[in-house]
Image 1 (cartoon, helix red, strand yellow):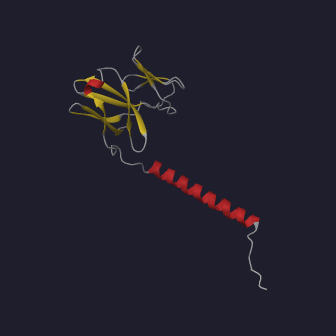
Image 2: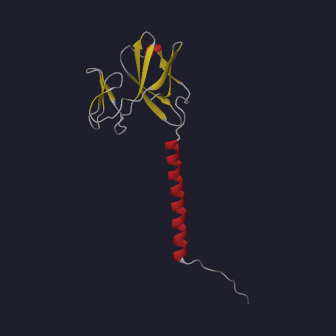
Image 3: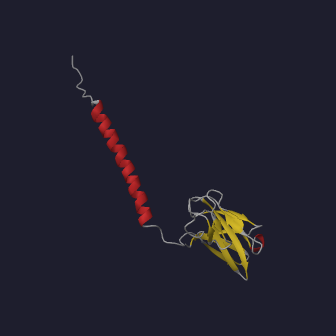
Length: 152
């Protein structure tokens, strides 16, 4: 009678190989993140998307809209500054990315997380935010208001 010659892999070797494979996969993931940080995509490469018509945005009042960015929904405050001038600000605070809220009574953006305050143009007025709110590409095409990628 013949017996099968099966070699068992010792537990210790199996564990070493498993840890090695998992560590290698995690390392490759971190390399990918580092690459996207060091070599970001060019600005303004995101296509413009319609977020409403001109009549949807009263002059001087920021209006929160969302649109489908590159793979994710994006939140933007759109402001009709009058005379065909528009402003689109990302709604994430530059301190820790908390969502900011517009207060019509005080005419300021407030971050509820750590007390960041911004003016209507997104400039920092107080609190810990290190930079103004990021601006988005915005265009008026006929009666449509179009928003796209980040400017700053």
